[in-house]
Length: 109
Image (tube, rainbow, N blue to C red; front, side):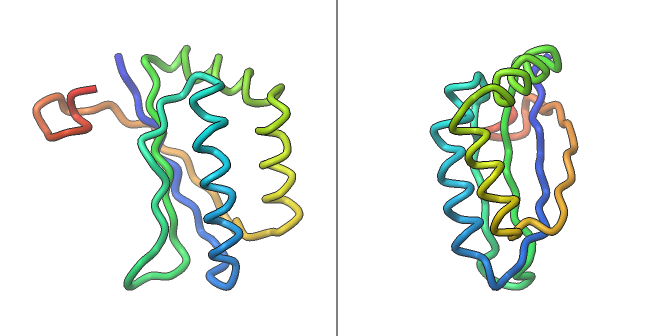
């Protein structure tokens, strides 16, 4: 069963550009480690301190394998260090979702 990891970030709105760079870095790292990146989303209007990332996997086991590869990936480790040094992420929550197959473009995964 396909799953999507929905990551909700609370970010420092004064460090928007740092978070954007962090998200852009994942665009190469995530696929290399086995995830299907659906996208990162930054605030545009309204609330200015929430951002989201969506990554799909064929199964929860595939997600666990991805997490192991990510921990040993040099570029991934560098991106995690960048986030820690710059402190633009104030909170991070993960929710695991499964698609309703008839519900749109993403639902057909």
